[in-house]
Length: 271
Ligand code: NDP
Image (cartoon, rainbow, N blue to C red; front, side, top):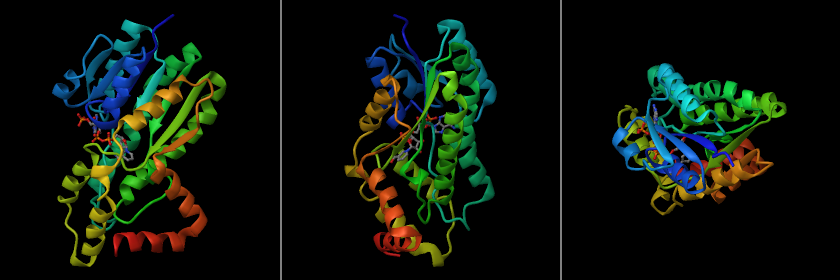
């Protein structure tokens, strides 16, 4: 049987790293991508080949895909995962920072979808897994640009699913809730670079309250298992939200309606 070939972006830590390792442990040959070379080298093995790149670099992506097709001849799975969270209230996040959030979280995913689709169409098979977020369907104060980027991913995934289904290609959205990775710490580092007037200080304090559960949140393996399950199913899920917080937040928003949900969020943030 031909070995299946997977590409995982953001594989130097957290969800991407756990996914690359789990896919490799289950028979896939994995091309693991991110910027931090030394971190990628830690997971190099017979079945994991690191390719250092930045997802904003279109030329580097084209070269990587060329290398993969030349050496392996096929692409079965793309896991679009590389991303970060630009915290800060809408008024205070600069347009430059907002653009960069979209460059990585949205156009980074789009560049990879563009890059793998010609090969997947040729094969008449393939699975694209886009890692979204609990904030792909709801939005919270202080998370505006990040939530906007993940809403964009949900929309692109839904359109793409309809476009390529008949060509033998599946598109899956996985929407994690709070997961213990490097993500929250990086978010707070970025938040420190943004200057907020006193009027927003309660919201900023509320962000720390919202993410206070991160140290006891599930590890990235729970999402890696969901990815493996999706790419090995003959009929994969359209959208898999996990763990429980990701499922219940969307249901709560739907049941409560916009005004009551916003009130409940403000209570939790103590704003
Ligand atoms: P981590 O910060 O641990 O991992 C993020 C990964 O993205 C790293 O490997 C980083 O690698 C890579 N990355 C970031 N920017 C770039 C770039 N410009 N080019 C290439 N790679 C990049 O966070 P998570 O594992 O938690 O995040 C993974 C995904 O999960 C993200 O899309 C995030 O939005 C989503 N998510 C996470 C949640 C959580 O609670 N952790 C909740 C919901 C969604 P490097 O710096 O080496 O380039």
